[in-house]
Image (cartoon, rainbow, N blue to C red; front, side):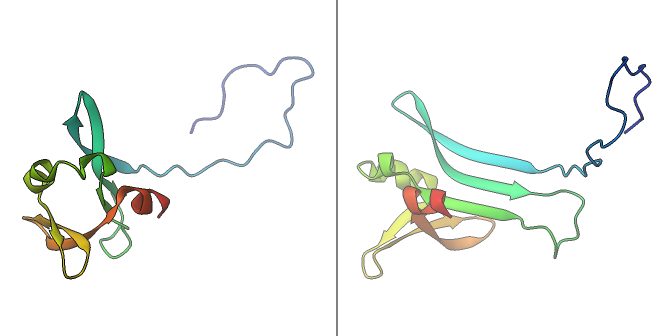
Length: 110
């Protein structure tokens, strides 16, 4: 950042300033589905551009919205399936294949 070009008012603090900060741009994407007129999030992705691939967290959180538990057809349309044997939800995507998905309340806490 450029140093300020304005004049310091009489009595203004010119010492003991806060150190300059480093800013990081983060891209956050939230995938939603419309349910009863409201948007319900089912995936959150975080990406920090400019980092090497091994340093980028490229975080993705798949969550099974509790408001969709009584709508299995909508869960299926989004790519979610339930494994009775493992008692777990999974998401089937084209890019990463089958991945485990946590319930919404568990995912938000993480």
